[in-house]
Image (cartoon, rainbow, N blue to C red; front, side, top):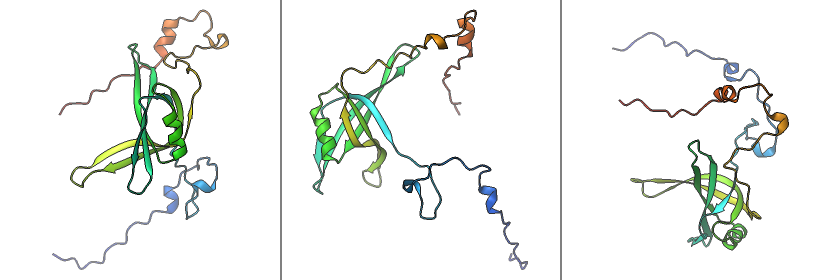
Length: 185
């Protein structure tokens, strides 16, 4: 059945309803200016310091560029059960200078890289593969052995708790990680 009544105009919400009460403090720069003059704070910066897992692999591309791939092993902080966990982070570069630095390193040597986090999609439309990697813009070898970051740093004497406080009471104040179990349906 068709209605002959005139439709009501949609409610107009003032533009100020969507604006934050207090704008966040933003450092102005040309890098973060949009074409409409608004300022954004999007950043995609990665800094990794770890060990080279294996020699870098080079893959020539049809365009004539060379893609250099490697992985960096980055240790996490010591797990509460005492085991030290690590992540293997895939890295790539198209820069020949960065590739030369990585090729000069032996496996298990320390390296510091900076770059951007990237998501790449490969494969046919019926079975896409998503791959996350760091596209490295700079790389430099780290001299010597890095300090063991798996042990938490000790507080200086001036920051130690005052005498007379029970360490067990202080430990009870520290939040613990609790595993989340999703309800089964």
